[in-house]
Image (cartoon, rainbow, N blue to C red; front, side, top):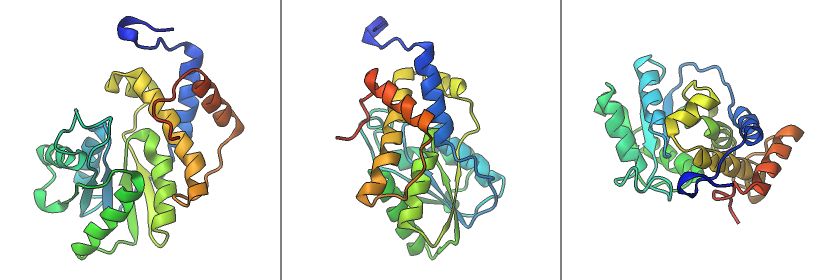
Length: 223
């Protein structure tokens, strides 16, 4: 069913399935001081806001913003995700000297690999890294970092928002659910390709994922 502007009308059962996947994606790590943080680029400027908040709380001395552009961010952040994140964080009080820029990454593996290179070039070789991401990217970023940077202890953090509040903040329920489904597909499939470590997916989460795919939330699936 579609509504105004051909937007899919989302039912309560679909929202319940999406929330189940949302809850699974969040790692709920206990955030503590780390040697460095990486703000993972996306369409969500809240990543930069929360990274700035954690910096001001004294949780890390160096902050990398990583990301070029993707189909979901090219219009919103025409100069690249990392560049816009940096500007936003500076506006929130993070000193320019504390920010390292990684403006080329086009996927999560590149976010991790390129940010590691940027940190090393700055003479920073951390033993603990805090990954700051949009809420439903926590698990995928964790699994990716554990594969590509196994010697580092990885913690994940995102804005402490409830699912309904996040939907309102983004303003596009269809986009968010498409992204939730797409991220879960990557959590499932990427270990088979050597891109990430395997994560257990509970049966109810997998069933919700299959249902949403059948319902057409497929725009962010990989072929």
